Image (cartoon, rainbow, N blue to C red; front, side):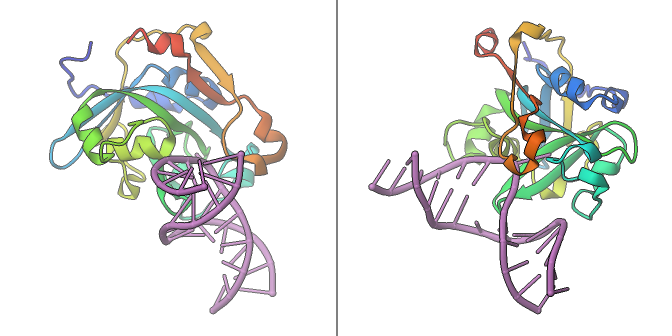
Length: 202
DNA sequence: TTCTCGATTGTCT
DNA sequence: GACAATCGAGAAA
């Protein structure tokens, strides 16, 4: 399906949507691609996302308008990478969305590897799974804190649309992970997962 | 300046 | 199922 991958990122306007919950679902089936300085190309289908809706979402780093050096990039115009360190160990990769000063973001939790699997395995030291879990996605794709703020329309980290249609019936909604502190917002079904059945069609 | 704890993962039992 | 690893952001003082 992706035998000939060219640099063809989704245009930035895609990320300017005001509805981060809807955009989180639209990102399912899209293809995440990274390329490091050695020219190692890795790509895979986004299969799990979480929506974080800016100031009104207690689970978001930007809740109640909080603005710090760490989350500054969330306030940028949509179409950038927000990468931060969690638990002192793992990098987590988010897609910044909506317009400037509206700090919405989509956490990429899981990716189905397609291209450059040997590089992913090398970076993961041959451990499995390769890219199920937000910290592992960053390991497999070589995303680090240095990539925080990177534009998703440049040739380091980008997302492509390969016309994979995801029917609503193939999207499983669930509670977001690890945000019990967010009280009532922890119960929002803002995690979106490609159903197992659909995965098998790749 | 100090303290707490996290949008997680891997290992051990 | 339990828990250690690990470090910086954010809050409190």
